[in-house]
Image (cartoon, rainbow, N blue to C red; front, side, top):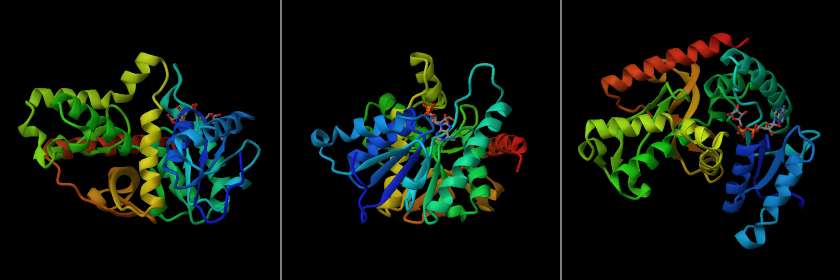
Length: 315
Ligand code: APR
């Protein structure tokens, strides 16, 4: 590992588990930022960072990776901080227990990270995603523009993948959005707005086929977990890097993210997935998507589900 250099933006990834490592891997390949990987497990982030660094000569990147398992000083001055630290829900664990445990971890991490990177955009991955993004917004004291939850970026890439497979076209020509809560049951894939080069998919697929694609999107994560007995991580890392790149390069990409709503979509005081213009300052603005009646009802149910999660948070 080599020293990070002043001048190149720095991205810190807290949690060097499966998704944190995939994120570092995809991000290194972009060559747009030095990377700091941290974890509480001694040796883990150091090993992961070194492994990725050693692929640089072949992959053709010259960014620097550093790592820490003893503190947060290395993260200072980051442009973006991604938080993946936490535990996944284990068999027998209630949602409340998961919220309790990950709330403790996230509070600890935010307390360490934010004072060292006061201008950073913070991106949350820890589950339950919408509740943890809300917690991060509340305890960090940062403006809402700079606290984003990664939810819709992953659900949307899954929706686009399955639409392209069903239609037999390139994923590059499929456009779509998934909004709402980041859970199987409560995400809202917006079938009415999905297009292939501007052609509504509703005119290309039967209602039945489209519903099957929506159902597979909802179970996009669960299908992988059932197959390999572990959560997916590659697409989640790619989704995070889509957001990181939009911030670092001020791309103003339209990416569904979990953000704090203050009247948008008729809702206040919760974080939930909506289409966001993502640029240098994090959230530039929220776009209001025209929803069908069914999608509007599904979004309302999704809001109710997130409010149930928030009721468990002790804030
Ligand atoms: N500080 C830093 N790292 C931590 C902390 C902490 N306080 N607590 C846990 N970690 C680390 C773990 O040591 C682990 O390496 O976070 C990492 C999480 O990685 P994985 O268990 O591999 O989980 P992953 O599949 O990457 O998912 C990341 O997404 O699904 C959610 O809530 C889930 O937290 C999980 C996150």
